[in-house]
Image (cartoon, rainbow, N blue to C red; front, side, top):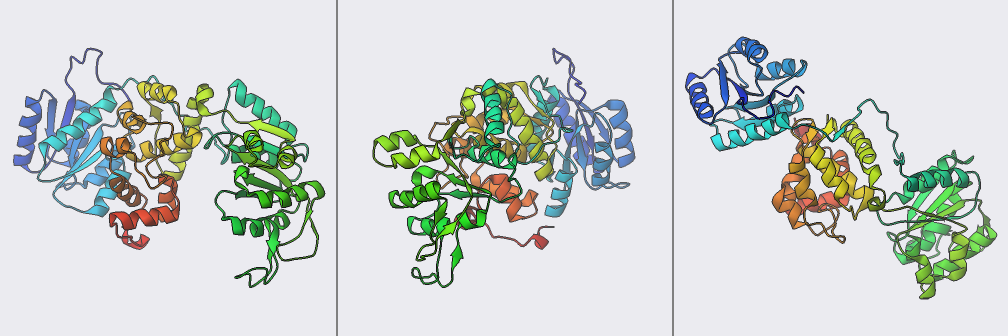
Length: 470
């Protein structure tokens, strides 16, 4: 966008007010002129379009009901031109569906009448912040084609991982992937599988920490009918389902000691028996294990079988945390903003220099997963096409290495909710923007459907079917 301000800000910001009510128009004209803004006025749509061209306003305050035009039509027409001013819609009609339409067409803010001048001035200043910003940060290449599950990185550490993936994809040896939570261990495992000759075979991830102990054995090896209470039919386990494909044992350090013995036998003999069964079943599934724990230390403490450890770690891949490869952060930001723009119908084009520096300086204890979560939240709040530091700072303020994103668990981070927006408000806003599509909302908030249902109940938010959302 063209920058209308000179470096000294000697020229006042220009504001065009469009309203067919003379008293409202005069009141805003006097108020904003006294505040030092350059003000022009129009009483209909025709004058509005003409003065946008001649006056070149930074901000347009636009009544949605005009005698010769609909404000939404004017907004749509302006968004198709270059150097569009930031548009603040004002209206005496409190209509949720109209509000949603206006925001989707690119309105910067939507303010009801009678106008709260403090609210209006706050919206004007936020819009002018965007106009003043000299973006020296990151410009998003919206034409860059991203692939789901792509591994992003240009640092020496990541280039070594790419080489390792190439080597490991050409054989069937067992692999142990080590890395902190959120570093992308499953992505690396899947990349090994997808570059192998067996890419058409299944890739089956199993989170060993998410399955209760008495069900994990059945999940891995299957069971026969009547093997235990509730086993009303025989079930094939993941090792059978995988065929010649790949099994990812995520958080392998959580596998109980007694099941470790059966896993060891499978790795040695490539055969197993279902729970409650006597028939020996062969499988050629490849095993890739992943962990965020120090398995070797667990071996020394007697918490993990030494023979199983050596079977699993024929090859080892260590994924560095994001704080050790900060040069990759701009690439990762661009990748996820493109993905967010596509998935959530956003148009984030730039990241302000100060915002980028703040994200580069932050240690990201939750690694890439935390960065994606923060970018998704920033995109949901963004007014305009630039991510500003003023919105990044509260999200990263006071973060500890053991802190969790407020929507990622039961405990909320007070720094996030007090300084930025309450969790309840954010959930409602996301649901409204996504027309109460719960699947997309879960994706935007980075939470599971059960967690969303729990939050709706906790905050007394009444779920709405999609056809009621307008």
